[in-house]
Image 1 (cartoon, one colour):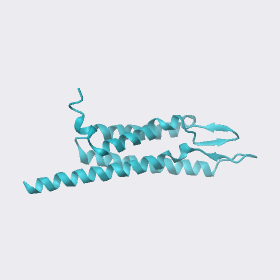
Image 2: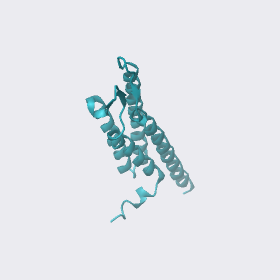
Image 3: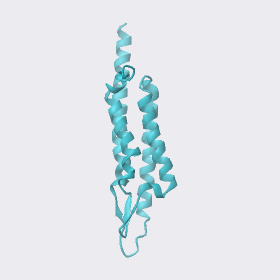
Length: 142
């Protein structure tokens, strides 16, 4: 059953993309973005964050599934990095403009998930580029 997927699983970029998928698709449910007066704010409370994190998770999954097309996978990774930079910018902007009243807002771990995702996506793109260069060098030898 895993015969068709074994080349995909054997590549390190698949591991990086799977971890990026986990970072943007699963972990935001468990880690709050920030806490104000003891009340945690999760990404589900803002529709824009839901859409952006969902799109990032979808792009990571699409990158995993397009393992046969390295160039396509590379472009998807770049788009996902840009999306996560936008998401990080929105988180920083929102956290700087939070009004906590008497109690100052505390930043949560969830706010830093796009940074983790960006690092994983950069590592995946480096591995994809390395694979592409290897294939090109083998083609030159023919």
